[in-house]
Structure formats: C-alpha cells, structure tokens
Image (tube, rainbow, N blue to C red; front, side, top):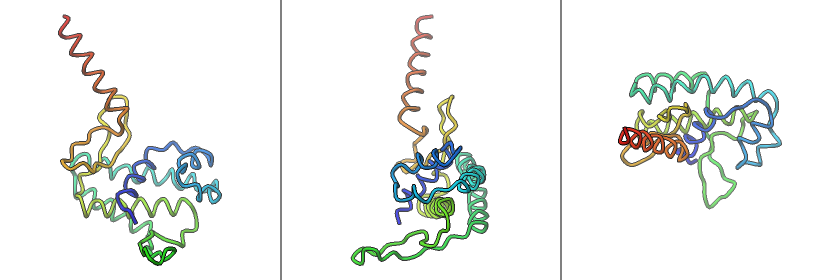
Amino acid sequence: MDFIRYAERSAALVNAELVDEGSLTDHLADRSWLHRSVVAADIPALQAFQVELRPVFEASDADDVPLVVGTLNDLLASHPVTPMISDHDPSNLHMHVTNRASSVAELLVAESLMGLANLVCDLGATRLGICTEARCDNVFVDTSPNQSRRYCSDRCSSRANVAAYRARQKAAAS
C-alpha cells in the first residue's frame, strides 16, 4: 500500500467536483477497473465525506495538530477500515486497504483515511494545506523535504508568480 499516494488521492477527492456517476468515473480515470463498479449511491456518500474530510486539511494548514489528529481519529471511528495483505502477486506481498469494500465510495473513503493517518504519523500533522493562490481553495499534500509547498498545482503557482510579477512591474512603473 502506497500511503503517500493514498493521501494525495484524498486531496484529489476533496478537490473533485462529484455531481454524477460520470464525474466520479472521470475522477477515477487512472483506475479503470473501478469504473464498472461506480453506482449512483457513491455520489452522495462521497460528497458527504468531502465535507467531513476538508476540515482535516484546514486544521493542518492552520498548524492545529490536535484538531488534525482528533478529526482523523473521529473519521476512522465512523468509517472503519479493514486492511488486508494482498497476495495477488505472491512474490510481492503488500497491504491493501480492503478487499471487502462493498462500494467504490467505501474503498475511496478507506484509502483516504489510511493514507492520511499514515502520512500524519510518518511526516507530521502539518503536511496538508490549502492553496494560497487567491482564486483557488483546493487542498494538497506537501511531501517536499522542507515542507515548503504553498500551491495545489503548477498552474496555481504560475498564476500567482505571474500576478506578483505584474504587480512589481506596475509598482515600478508608477
């Protein structure tokens, strides 16, 4: 189980605009084996989870470690996770979140929670953030060595840098 990837997928899940089965299938573009399992009931379950999960990123962004840990623990209690050893490749035994998830929503929730819980334990509770680009409120996972990430994407970073450059040019001209 790649917990960093699961944590990053949790940020992508919080940022996803899930309005119907098609948008969930689009969100799962790199996981085509899940597409046939997507059902309408996954959408409201994931929308509710997005609302529950966003405060974890907000608390981390505010350096509120007790709130990050408490919120994650509450979510783990309300969405139990069953990790299992996967033996589909006997030469490479590894952990999967669960092989018994009854829905795509349950699988994504379990992956998100295990990924974030392990990231918090391994890298610290302040490795989650909210994009600082003025027109964006997406969340992200910061795995940089010096914990310096401020933007959710290269696009937002470029947008902010261009805006700052233009502001400096305007100030210099006046």
